[in-house]
View (cartoon, rainbow, N blue to C red):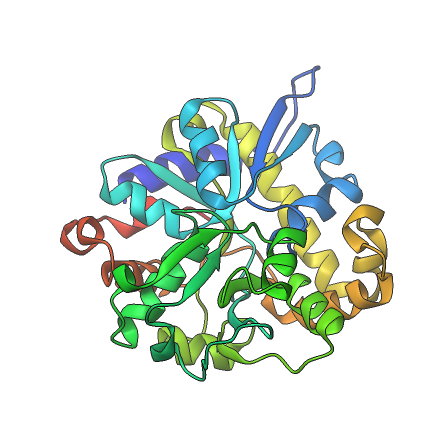
Length: 326
């Protein structure tokens, strides 16, 4: 608890004044920037919220959360916009990472069957022997798939995992039956349905409260967050506070102006069909946290889920309060 207060106090004090004449430069790695699960990070830039907080933020896109994490650990970025899963996983391995804004209260991921597969897949148990796409090996989509397989008594060793990204590459892989199923997120899911003119079979869906409850047994499950190493956060408390303010301002904007969110995003994210993108954003709105705070039972739920497939998480004695700060 002491360590959490040590960080929180500077964060609060930092909000009182801005004395630096130069804008602090911050590099943020995003594990699939065009996906709606990470929309707040880009929207904050589009709305100039980082700039208003005195920051010079660069968003760097990666094909998955595991690659974004590698960039953080390698020192090429300062902060990651990724899933809270990795914080629990890395803390269990002896690394000290901490989130400081929770952007999603539902993960927004779904296990979707390829409409072009020749396999008969009607339930998760039918994935035995199948090829299933994830964004990247070791990513949160990978961890989610392993959890679902174990939950339905399927040995992950009997399933072929393959990285297909989260956007156009994932849609193409599903459309051409390069994989039998995949963990996907919107707008890719809606794009696949539109392109194949099919009612997609979805085996698990965490885009809604009901789906989260069914998959994880909780009402809210922390997913996309801003996180960094504890060392960086303690040395850059004022910068972290400014990022937190920018993100909370953005989350409030999403709640207050939902109709304007899609239009504010970069044109390249909207693709060839802006109306489809706007529809996907509207459907995703309930996923976003209204205030950026971590749900009280969130870290324990993530630890419980990861413990199903990760022995180090299962055996670790974690101080969950040290894995996040509000």
